[in-house]
Length: 205
Image (cartoon, rainbow, N blue to C red):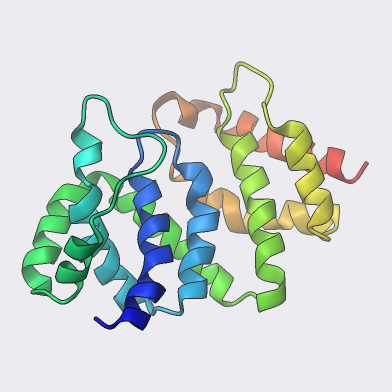
């Protein structure tokens, strides 16, 4: 792997490593997806980077008693060796270690594939809208969303009409994130979705 390819890989490694942090990572997925689009890698290339390179590097944090929640340290030389190594062995190791996050990885790829079909100039605004939706949707249902004001401002800056934002939520993002809900979150999905719609209403007020 030459220096140019390593430079191209670094943002992807960093973004994907965030998925393994010991914190709420689902907020990050729109931003991660945008990084994947900007990298120019194909889906098969990204699958290899996820399963063969980054998962063996970061999966330890899933099992750590006191996991890292801010930034995972990455051994770049090890990542480079995996990138040029035997993909079958690396893929088996990655599949075993990364199995708990397999459904999250599929969601990130879904977001990435949607963004690929989005005009380049509109991608950033779309991701900002998605991020606002997700922050409100995933907030604890028994308290007021902490990020409501900043999310409202982001939606206003997106340039999308309230009608377009509702469609973006209902037909694009909600089906993906509904599958990412866990445990008691599932029972409150409709309330969570209504919070997003209320946010859209505020942004158009």
